[in-house]
Length: 342
Image (cartoon, rainbow, N blue to C red):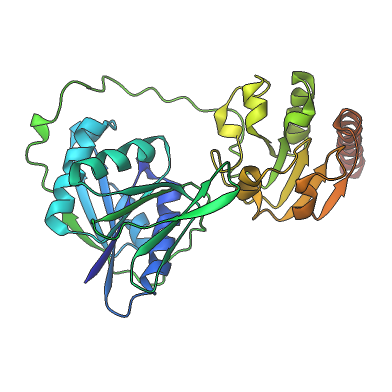
């Protein structure tokens, strides 16, 4: 029997969204095989709670669960040996990780221990005619998509960016929970020991959860325009997104705003791009957006090729006008509401 596993990353007692996305993709990959396939989720946590029910709802047929107080805070020197021992015991064929801060460290650490390969930051997965996992990874700045295969080692491992796939609930609920043997956990490498976990929440709406994303690129030219872009996003109830140059220039100060192959993949209902040229590595991150509107003074900007509407114009002129229009519209709506109340 083939086994496709997903590492179930949890944050503050909740399963991460990328885990659910990968379980949905695992169900899709399983259809390529003519024989039985086990969809498994591997969970390491202080307390399991209702997380197994969540994993089951999105397609996990077997949940391999390790529960221990020492697993409260993630640490690769603790988690990696546990996963490596489980792999050697259960022999999965495919093991998928979210390309998060945790997954991007944990996947290669585990791969090194069990002596296999890992395709990092994939944008798609499929099963080839020979039954091998084909991982698609952007290369040369996103200009081409390379195919990575691991033909001789097991498991075949890959990390996938959050937002790449769509999480869909499963109709079949047949989850079996298997306890992970944590013997030897006390002997884990103690050179790195988590002392405490500090959680901070950003006031800004995450771009991969927003229905409206207002994105800015190098064409913004200055931090003042970045501030205007953030204001417009706030007025529209959306989130501000960026390209790499905005971060490099110091206009945007949070890498969580970056869209593209080295940032977030997004699927908003509306995407508005200001001063974005449309490099392939950015388009890879926003190509699944609903309505795409772009403003750039370069009439040959690549972003226009994937836009539903576009304007060849200077963002210095357009941004203030749009902000005034939205403010005026909101003020009119509020005034009308007050009159109707009276």
